[in-house]
Image (cartoon, rainbow, N blue to C red; front, side, top):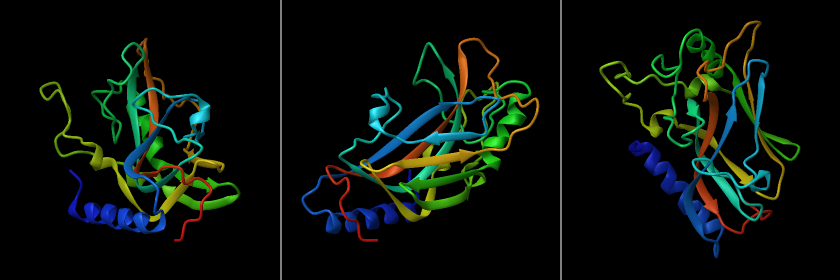
Length: 215
């Protein structure tokens, strides 16, 4: 359940959008894009464009005709079962019962990097520390506890400034992580792939792409 302060923040943003986008349908929504972690890769680009191909849930992309206003963001890692997509639990830290061996320590690089956001040629967010997204729940998963106490809201970080993603513009989130010789981000289990997910929570404004937005 969202904290009281976050509920107020969402309400404030929604009321502002109602004033700025009269005549448009405004709905609470989310965007999510997953990427496979690779040992030789230090940058991951998230564009959320529907033209990349229609994603299957749990991923969600943005239509060229719409806008999305980000209130909170989350950066998660998970072990995806290739045969059962959509069943993996998003993790806010390298959970030792989910990720095996040396991979557990190496996955900490995800939470020692930075996240940037650029729309067209304008940098709207520079060097947001990914450590802000790292959250270890008090009750952790173990052999006797099949699931952690983790819920989606634990990993969501409220952004100080609203980010407006216009579907008709070039939008790019760049995740940059440290890397080193011998890094191991592979799951090591056949049929299971370690991935990183960027999750954006906020409001979808239908048919408002390339419109004006008063900050």
